Image 1: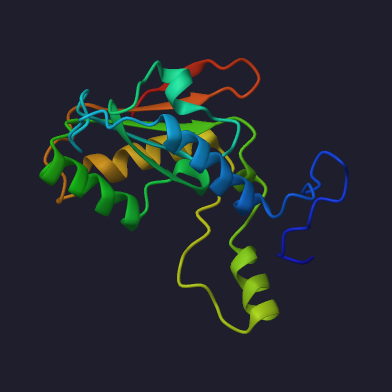
Image 2: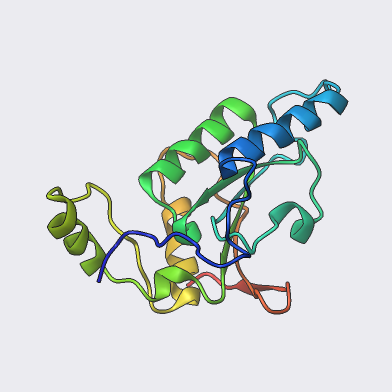
Length: 182
């Protein structure tokens, strides 16, 4: 098993003659900037909420949650798991930028459900260096949401842990299902 991602070969994943995907993104930014006006916002989220979610491309968090630009802080990683770096971001979000609520969102069909910590070993064999991070794979998405809630609620660095709620987003229906804390 190789741990390297394969390059898309079909017409759907093909990169057009106009350059790389990054070139296309920079071009899109140029068009965006032409119509851009400074919204005059502060860095503090209007709704005083931080959302921690998986990086999965199927999750359009703003649309799914009815959020607008400036409403929340969004922290994303593989699995939406609460790692030390997520605690770091939440701590800054709360202590420096005024958020008070935390919403955790995992989802159905997550890629971390099919990985194991063996992935780190495979990387070490392929590259010659073991990653310093844990994969944080899981088998039970509900239990992983509960674990993430516990990590937030027990962090000594966070000021506001009374409004921490966890959900599983169904990628087929678009609905959130709330997970009760253990």
